[in-house]
Image (cartoon, rainbow, N blue to C red; front, side, top):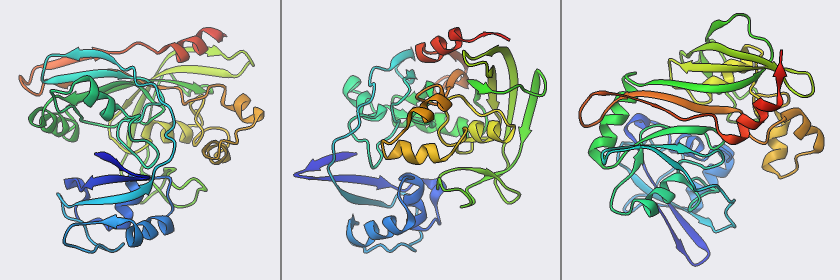
Length: 322
């Protein structure tokens, strides 16, 4: 997807079917979420190439349209590329993605992504993730090892045939041992963080079920709860936004945690000591724990699990019984 030419990096995009009819500028804001609309429109006018066409911000997209953005090469942030393999039978590949590793290339990451690392590790295959995990979220990521298997996996996710369970470490005391948040989510523009989801009446239907596994107290005395989180829909930031709505923000969450201004300071490499104390962890405490899905080749149900990673397990061990 990426090729370096001198000091310029060419980032290619192919419009997926679910973005049919979207404006080009909105599509790029979705794909490169740290950029403002004004910056995206500047890139479209000055740094976009599309063979045989001149695209505008208001261009309506059709599936399969391919174009390239040019950006100046910058030092790429480091990331842990050492992902574990949980299941691999030649068609279905499920890995345990480490926290901090982006799944797909972005404006900041090219070589240090899961898809780039997978190409190097499995050069004879076309490994492609069938769903998304946030960069800071660790855990199970299901991939097809060839386009046919990836297509079937993506269809299973879209049809709701995949059961996902996450582990989350949340600050606060839940209302009961089992509870649900059924609240529509949307990007409303009300926040200083442009990508933040809000519960909004006009948002997309969103539902998450939560189960309390254990309660403890952090070393500073704050109540912390280990939750099993089961999203019934697949909205951006759904678990994090629903926990914030329930007054149970994830430990380490820079957007939905104690102060969203922390996220701005984080992007500017300007976190303060007070910020780190509030966060308690350098990343959001969310882990993709279990997956149950139909095998793309046989259709048989496959159940997989990835244990809590070392950083979250160590924090949890530092907590004491409530």
